[in-house]
Each structure stands twice: as C-alpha cells, then as structure tokens.
Length: 203
Image 1 (cartoon, one colour):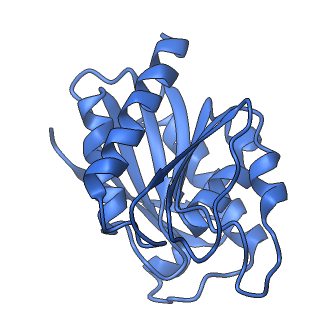
Image 2 (image 1 turned 30 degrees about the horizontal axis):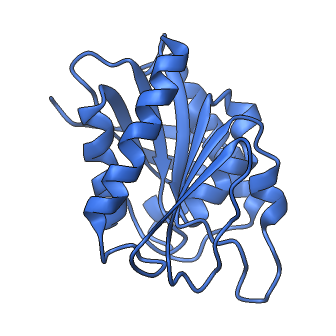
C-alpha cells in the first residue's frame, strides 16, 4: 500500500488529502478531523487501519483552515462547502467507480452528517459525535437528517452526550471520553463489522 498526499482546491482554500488505498478496494471512506485536531487523532488512525483490513480505501481530509495553520474552524457553511468540493473531486478522481462512505470525528462527523445527501454517501461514520454544544444547544437535527446508514462510536463518558440509536442509526458505546483514547481496540471492533455490511450492500 502506497500512501499519497494530494492538494485540492476548494471555494475556501487549499485542502490536503492523505490517500490510503486498499489493495482491492470494495468501497472508500472519506474522513474529516475534529475542530481543533488533525488526522493523526488516535481514533482516526484506528478507523483507517480497520477500514483497510475490510478492503475499504481511506481518504483523510485536512480542511483548508487547518492547512492554512488555523486551529479555530470557520462557520458550518464554509466547512460544508469545502467538504463537498473535496469529496466531489475525489469521486471524480482517485476514488472513482467505488461506493463512498463519509465520516469523521467530532466536528468532522457533523460535517459528514450535514453533507451526506450532497456527497452521495451510502453510509456515515460518526466517531465521537458532539451531540450537545458547549452552549447547551443540541445538534440532534444534524444527525437525524441523515437518510442512510449511520454508525456512531461514542465514549461512555463523553461530555457532549450520546446519540440514541434508531432504525438507521447504530450506536456503539466504548470505554472513555470524547477523545476515545481509552479503548482504541473497541473502536476498531465497532467500525469493522459495520463497514463490511455497507460494502456488502453495494457489492
């Protein structure tokens, strides 16, 4: 497997994408980072490994504000527009011809939920979805709006709350807080079977 990094232009600046191609990809997952973090977050590294073992290629996306060296994210509309542009370029280029799953951790999960329909995702993976904002405002509407299969992997003591499961949404609770560093093996064990189901549905 050869990991490559490409730069893509978006309406809001340059984004970086780190491509981890599976040897015989059956699908691809595009993952976004948290608001103040990056793609090296331990849970994203764990998800990447689990996906590759399921023959799912991985694209780890650095949003333009991070590429520009800023830690604070812009407003949601800016994040979403950049994300949609990135995903469109990926499905027209290195990820062409295979089913697409989107997702991310924390803020990246929110972006994937809000843009699921626009990107044509067949599933959305939410790692540490921040259900309640620090202000107390609920983001329930963002995750409820997704009309495809959703997997939420959430720490049992996540200070931002835990979404409830629904007919379309599976929720796996693992040991730990919002950082999901306490039991990374459990994160991978939650993600792998869900990915295999999504792949089987599109094969």
